[in-house]
Length: 288
Image (tube, rainbow, N blue to C red; front, side, top):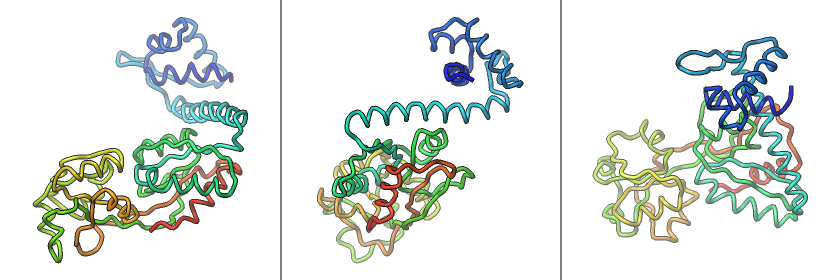
């Protein structure tokens, strides 16, 4: 089974068409069809079903897709590690994280690595939990850090480190800042600005909230919060950063909600010395 043939297979899978895949791969359609046929003969199974609606993978094609993506990512990672080694790095780690971890904890991890004299390159991919989970399964990430509040997967090990409280905040001078205690009813009197993953987490605890703005980064969240009397949910660990730009904690009793923070990685993955170093640092963090 050649790597090039696997790339042809993935091209058909992603384009759902032999014609479109051939154009994307810059080969002729007969050559592509022949390559896929040789792969099917080698495996002894049919990989695709063709119909008027397009080309779809069989159950064997879906299984091969999972492994082919992992192989493709491993090849990319091998090239990346060789390049990093040539450029003086001792190793590299591909980390997936949400906006809170990437803006607050990643700088601490990098600083700790430097303080310990470890010249490890960290490549960060910031996204929501679902896309990061897919990248991890496909071999595009070494680990995920941050919010691990998503369904269990048999191939992924989740390691809980800390439970993070999310606190009610608003800009300095917000009408609710002068109250002795913010009541539940007050939460529906103002519009909210939130991170993209937060509405689903707020919904089980609070109803009828006016979510006016959803943003992808902590920086955008804080910037938007300063423009009006919005209510803003923020993890407790980000309060010092928020206060430095004029966003303050409002006197709501207790946290809005809590969520588990930790790390996730593939159960069967080989842990390189670089990944082990990053994991050790993350486990030692002070999360408050």
